[in-house]
Length: 386
Ligand code: NDP
Ligand code: MG
Image 1 (cartoon, rainbow, N blue to C red):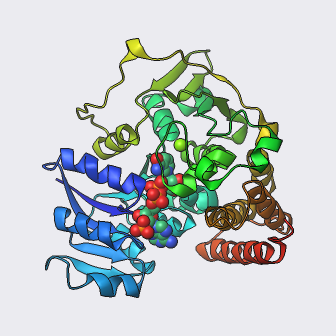
Image 2 (cartoon, rainbow, N blue to C red):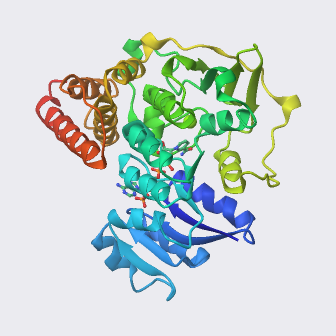
């Protein structure tokens, strides 16, 4: 039996992970779960999976819950406890399905304590890639990528030699605004941004997919996961979301990963790795639409371009990029700013950032907090004139 900590159980990836676990109950035991605010769902999950620990985000949430939990479940409160759950001695596999750089500490804790880490929380790598790499070099821990493109690349790379890879190719559906003009983008609403044509995901990543910043994040994620230079990581638009990633080798061969447009396939692969288990979510190849691959028109996606320039500047710029985006997306979802304002907030915060390496968690935290404050200040002062 594999003992699992699932962080972010109440989110989109978290819920799908529990659905996969449910199909293979004799193989997996849920030792610990975390939620942030959604205590109603967390309570339902705890009753069903009977974990030893539940972490909730606030004392207020804990008070509402504490009398209803099963006797064997201990209730813990606050962010510090997420790292604690990730490092529990009885746990073999940690699934990090938290959203935002709030997930970095748990990622580092899982690695430091030698766990297998199924990583969905891409912000860990965007904002803390160098820290994650350093921690991995000092541990026997292994990261299994949940993000569909990286899961695809990871599968294509099995048995291959990284020196023989010419390029990693990440596919992008293009999101809901693929063919929108700048003029059309001015008018788009939160509801339109949340209507992704192919994937059902949490709100933050859905907005990141509409600005295409998500695709730039995935380039950074691939750089740190597979230890390849940025020049060897490419993006192609593939509106059908059937081909999730491709690896081009030096001899001209290309391996592509094709699979259902469903995160459960990637989650199952991470849970069962290095084995495979039977799933009934299958593609009917004969009835597929025709599959297209085409270049991305970067000029239409300013966030994507901005992120590529941040990559060239410094590690601190990546922290600032992530933090300012988290603040801007939150303001957009609260309908305080327009879709095109998101890039303005990020751009202002990046401009104020001077180049610096990120050598410790404290370095990360300092830049993260400074960038959030700057973004909030910018939002407050400029929101009416943006
Ligand atoms: P959701 O927003 O659906 O879920 C996020 C989870 O994290 C929830 O359990 C939420 O708790 C919890 N959470 C939110 N904020 C905090 C915080 N500050 N501290 C602790 N916990 C918090 O996100 P997704 O499941 O969509 O995404 C999770 C991660 O996976 C992201 O990094 C995303 O980019 C990545 N990913 C997601 C994909 C998808 O299909 N959804 C695909 C590829 C990658 P609560 O709801 O209880 O408040
Ligand atoms: Mg992805």
